[in-house]
Amino acid sequence: MPSHELRSAATRHRPTRETARLPAGIQFVEFFGLPGIGKTTASRHLALHLQHSGHSVSEAKIAMESRTLLGRQLYRVGLVLPRLFKQDFRSIAARIARFVAQGEQETATDLIRVTWNLWTVAAYIHAERSRSGSITILDQGLLQGFWSVLLKSRQKRTSESWLDILSAIGVEDIIFVDLRGDPDLAQDRLRTRGDRSSRLQRAASGETALWAKADGAYRKMKAEIGEPLVSSACALMLATVDASASASPEQIACRTYEATLLASRRHGPVPPESL
Figure 1 (cartoon, rainbow, N blue to C red):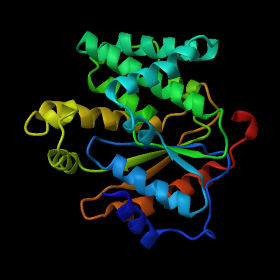
Figure 2 (tube, helix red, strand yellow):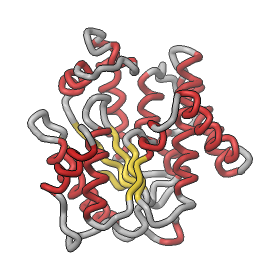
Figure 3 (cartoon, one colour):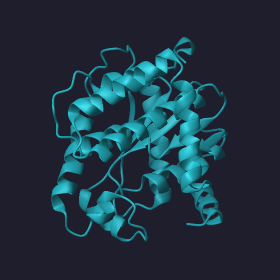
């Protein structure tokens, strides 16, 4: 949808400046769900809703889409490499690599790809935390990165828990939005896309085993999210939103906005010392 249409749609449903706002300590809203369920569209609409409610918002995807393939990789190297000289990030990177390697990926390419992706997202969040006053919306964030690991994992026993790694990265300033929808709906939406960039897009026409594993990994993560975080006193702020076929992107954005407000209220104020 063109940007002027997005602005027009958000205006019809936008909250007023008098409505409640997200706490000042929230720096990220991250979407999680099956490919094709509508994360990117919902994130763009949500950005407009937050802007209309007075928040300063940035979208990580815009920064990536404005670059060429080579430019994107150089940008990622520029994010990750300097932080590998810092002990705290190097520890997180090592834990991610160990988790991926011990769980075993189907191919060496998968191992490198999912490890590099998670390193990049963790480095991006680390970099954005040094800036204040803006909420960053991620349509592909940490949860989606761990889901990609589980999608091609051989499910071997690991000494690392993905939840504990997530906790070490930090969750106190992130609202996670679970965009929940039927796998058949996600498949149907992927079929309508013009590109074939993801493995699930290529499998949308008949490889049911991969889709079953994708849904299984998603459900497994959802079940584990309810468990307490061992290395953090802070629980995940999780907002669950139904992405039904009958709901428009604007309606889903409204639901998401309300769900993020509710999640932040349940969680309570974000302690400044944790940021």
